[in-house]
Image 1 (cartoon, protein in one colour):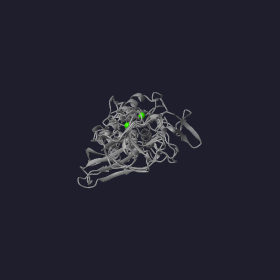
Image 2 (image 1 turned 90 degrees about the vertical axis):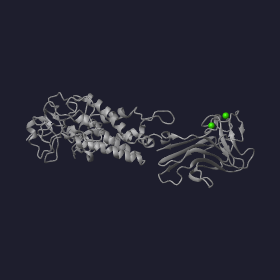
Image 3 (image 1 turned 120 degrees about the vertical axis):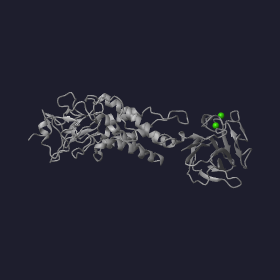
Length: 478
Ligand SMILES: [Ca+2]
Ligand SMILES: [Ca+2]
């Protein structure tokens, strides 16, 4: 009886387990369309290839993709952190638990592969809409693995296609459904394509023998020795990604590495298909820009609609360096006590903040007491998240920092305001600013819908000490 693993002095074991078949012999994961880790059997490393194609394809597809501009004018793109999570989700498809043919476009389960990537779109959208962005990114990565493997593992390219397969449509592609279980796609024990690769097919892995050992040989006579065989002998084999496909031993359909014929085409189509899939995922989210930005790993406050605030940076009055005035155009000043005047606009110098530098422009608002507030023309909308930010400052020459609160409210005519969110926890160091952030999400049955939004700053007086405010911004994301 011939060994399964040696042929002409060459070891084969590593090549059998790239994907689509659980293999208890491998204690490390390997990747279809890439191998970034060692492939080994206990006792010795069989082969090590550092060729992380799935990672490279994913990075190439996602880098530079931008669905829209952020509110600060820059392009919305996938963050490095998001790309890392997506890539992890992608390579996780090669864990033993995920060695399911459908996830790797193997064994003619192409309709299953299609339904998997379509189902993932629904999962991604659901997770992103509910704010679980890590899960959405992992689901995206897993789907991209299947999309990419389609081009590496099927006969799409050998069958003469030069464009993308219909992996982003919403109904079952007929060409995937037409695979007929018993139709011969390869002859000579799966080694020779039944030209011209009709219908569309993908490769099978070799069987695991009775002792639990898997592998394949180039000698067709060996194949009869594998019992029970999961591989129909009239179907194509996946083949070893380690062997050149023009090598007499390099049979099989896979285009997993640069060693394989058609690898550049498969790689290029996998990149393009990944971009198309991401576009479909983003389209599924419609106008939910906050959800899209979460999926991209972007700061959601840069993804929403910017709500207009009058004199949001307190630059409406021109002041000489060091000058102040007891009013803040566009804002209402509440009653307060303190030296003249207790609330106003100030252009600080290096005596208050290093270099006289403030977060935005030249001026800041100050209060020793009393409130600073503005009723906005924008009203509260359903299913919208509001994020309010303002920078809070503590001057160098004030040893004490008084208490403050930042509030997002709505105005009820003739009644007290309703406070939607409040923040009062920061304590910036001498001569520095910190950003106060508040958020409020209005649901469809919020009692405050339709009421005007209002921003209010309050200070709890401590002698003549001051709190400063600058760069007020409010966004709404859906
Ligand atoms: Ca300012
Ligand atoms: Ca100044």
